[in-house]
Image 1 (cartoon, helix red, strand yellow):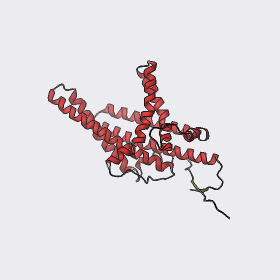
Image 2: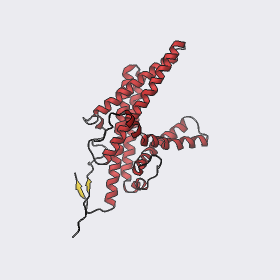
Image 3: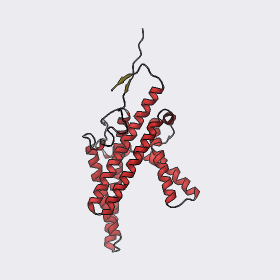
Image 4: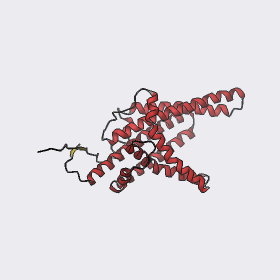
Length: 261
């Protein structure tokens, strides 16, 4: 009598979009990455402040020095994004697999981070490019067009990124399994968008208040808030992927699955 291998399906937390998400950046597992991103963001912000101040001075020597700080700002921004993107994809992948801790943090090689960040770079380009093109073709200008692009990107980005990861490609943003989750896991999508909207609003408010106060402390608070929000966002996205996979498995009626807490 033949036997069939039984699959193991992990059990979602009772509140998957609240439990272990907003506190995740401050856990022992993620605190080091939160600190690293905050320090790099702070250094980049300070370089940007000096560049703007020196370039506005008008003096020739100060302008040259300002150009040097501008180069440092660009380098810092690229470094931050490379680290942040590699961490984000590790968080999404392990969280979607049901891991409470992230087991596949990026290694120490910086060049590996650049390669690992390509799916996220592609998702950003695919998500925002068509929206900017539509705004340009329609002739919209100003705050209305900017708001439309921002809202459209907010809605499209998670779909595009999950589709790229599902397809294992950086150029194929359409995945039927991901689109099908809107049927079986629509409540999860609603909770994800609601949670991330609150996250973006809170982060923007903190950053605006901190920067208006000025000084190094304002830049430091903004750097920390942005880094924490980045990690929380992708933790929520990983929980969404886990939620949708769980609902898809339940909809397919898999009675031979072992369910493990």
